[in-house]
Length: 385
Image (cartoon, rainbow, N blue to C red; front, side, top):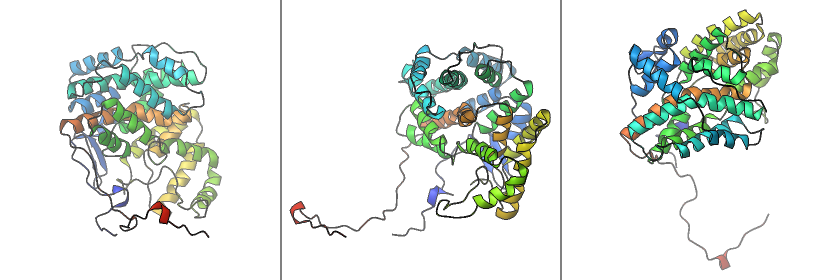
């Protein structure tokens, strides 16, 4: 059966109405609650952007100060969660044990059974505050490293870097991470956000929606792409090998039936990803500060080739990966760091979905056999070849 209304991957299908973010493909502008992300990156902080996404408006000085104190007061991770992480195999993928940690915190949350907007807002703030410590402590547990004490004076981005490395964060690394957290925080009805909305549309709880979203983000065609980009750059090694590598990579074969280069193209952006352009400046500045341009040189070759030959621009994951690498962040944490940011967007969408809820239950086109008569088992004959 053929139905012209079907769109593979639901591309171009309107699946809901939201007031959280807008992707203006004509102007190539992403905005959160009406504010251009460029302005937020230039003038704001992740904490202020979090307030905007969760509460719907920018805070006053006093509101932001109170919100920062609320986040800092919720940073500590329950010992029971750390105990659970201590019993997970050390070779487990961080995205998998993050799901376990969030599910455990959901069980322990005193508002677990309260699905009101007010309760979910409180739970969202708790998760946003705790996830940096969950990820940093969890990673150190898996690496058999001792935990690092938290410094309450640090910002959200500084707090994570200090807990992860045990060292005072470099100010420029903090600025770069703060910017990527802002840019990763929200992006409309992407796969993981839509999954979260589908989950809670059954009137399930916020933590279940977040766990489902983490599982969706794990895939290399969504959040996992940032890790794959750095693996690709490391495999290429030097800029002089990039052209030959990409020619081979884009050659269709039985082992490579759908050639693609990670970090390029985006279903929403046809004329370039505004977010990628913002982060690219940080990536180049990091390369300059280190005196090591290997990764930016390779990136230049790949960008030129993909634009000229395929008409594809880099997406956010492409410059973020070498930036994180030059900041000394472990590759397996790139996608979990995405979670530290996107938890805000997921939460905002979960609250919005439940405020005007209807079960999300699309239909499908059946392409199986036509209706057949039931044959008693004693009369069934199977032919063998």
